[in-house]
Every structure is written in structure tokens, then in C-alpha cells.
Length: 300
Image 1 (cartoon, rainbow, N blue to C red):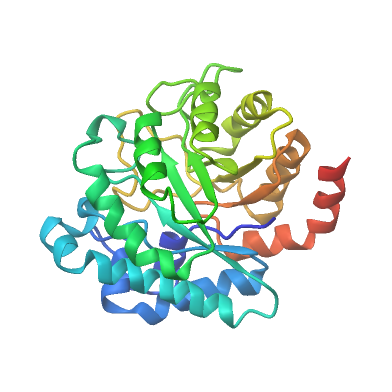
Image 2 (cartoon, one colour; image 1 turned 30 degrees about the horizontal axis):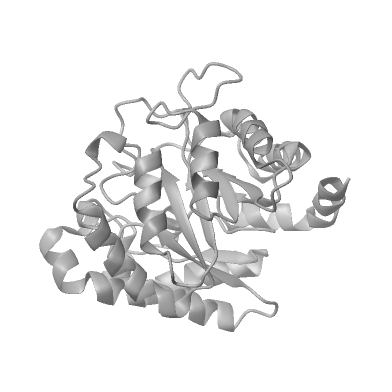
């Protein structure tokens, strides 16, 4: 199943209003038509699942006061725009409701367990009427993931969990979340909370293979799926916060070379593939052309 690519970078490419601290939420505030256009670009490229532009609809990006006043409205808008784009697609397209890190990407140390349920509740209430599944994404720790997963319990919609993992000098064969927790433990925690898919995103392609193998060992014969959507920029230092600025993109991750990584991940057991930061419609279109080949490899 083919996912979409990185929304924030795509909005910037399209000329949408884009700056810190609002990041991709600024387009919702000032030019929502560009958000729908970005979704439509990924659908035209072949995406079968698009993700709502709710990643930055959190106090960390739009501020406490604006979130209190408009968080529900913006979450609802992000869901409606994705649903509108999906409704005009020539083939069925599912909408994934993005539940992001609530206190900053890559920063498990900033997680506030007492505030998390209230923030998540706003996003869930706004997104729920419009989405087909929940995508709890770019999670750096198990407790961060668990708070988001619990917030969608009882909504009746499938849960996908996606972790971001260490990509700066990782020890081969021992993939870990950015919190330092083993991937195996994190995968089991997601399954225990009802995840129907466990994915890995917003990390380098080079570290994803070991994560897939670790996930496959834990999932075994369970019906859960494995997915990957990597980013296209160099390793991020341990003290970095994602979305601090537009990182330079790697020259070696053009659509053909990124497809090479997709082939490797499918061969290792992934069946949900797409892209994160810096992976655009051109990458998704290239993967789309290879879907028959990838599906055959997945079934072997």
C-alpha cells in the first residue's frame, strides 16, 4: 500500500506560507487551498493513503493561546481538506489522521504526561469525522506513543503507530527509538495497545532495515503490518529538534534511488511504504510505477 510523502516540504515547494514556529500549520491559517492542492498532488502521483496536515496543530508550533482558541477548528479543517481531496480521486484513497509528537519532534525529554491527554483530545475531536484511520507518527518514546494511542481508544477506527529511530551512528542490529528504547519493546507496546500496523518514519533510509527486521521478529504471525516512510535529509544530531528549519536534502535520494530503498524494505517485510520530509510527489510517482513488482515481491 502506497502512502504519501512529506507535507511540510511540499507546501514550501508550492509557495505556501511557511515559516517557524507555525511550520506546516501556517498554510491552514493563511492558505488552506494549498493544503488541498498538496494532497491532490500526492494523490495524482499514486498515493493510496494521504495524511492530514495536522502535524503542527499543537501548542509547540502554534502557541498555547492560539491552540486553545483555534486548535479544534484547525484540526477539523485539516481533516476536511484531506477528505475533500480524497473524494475527488479516481480510485479509493484512505485518509490517515496525523497525531504528532505533542511537545516537539525528536524530543522525548520534553514530553508532559499531564498535558498530553487534553492536547490529544482536541486533535482527535477535530479529525475523527473525516478520517479512516489514526496515524500516531514520529513517536520518539513508548510513553509518548501510548498517550496518543489511548486518546483514540473507542473511536472505532484502526490505529497505526509510527516511530522515529536513532539515525546518528546507530549500532548495527540494535535499532532504538530516539529515547534509547529498543525497537522490539516499542513494537510490542504498540501491539498491546491495538495497533494494526507498526511503521518507522522521519529517520534515514539506512537505519530502517534493522527496524523492519526487529519488528518482524515481534509481530511474527500476528496480522499487524509493517511500514516505512523515511526522510531525505542527513542524520540529525541527538540534541536536535525536528522542524527547526528546512534541512538540506541529500543528493543521493532522487526518485530512482529512493525506490531502491523501497525495494529493500519490501523484501524485508514492509507492506506500507511512502515518504517523510523531503520525499515529494515525484518519488511517490516513481514508486507507483513499481507497485506490481513490489506486490509480487511482498507475496513471495
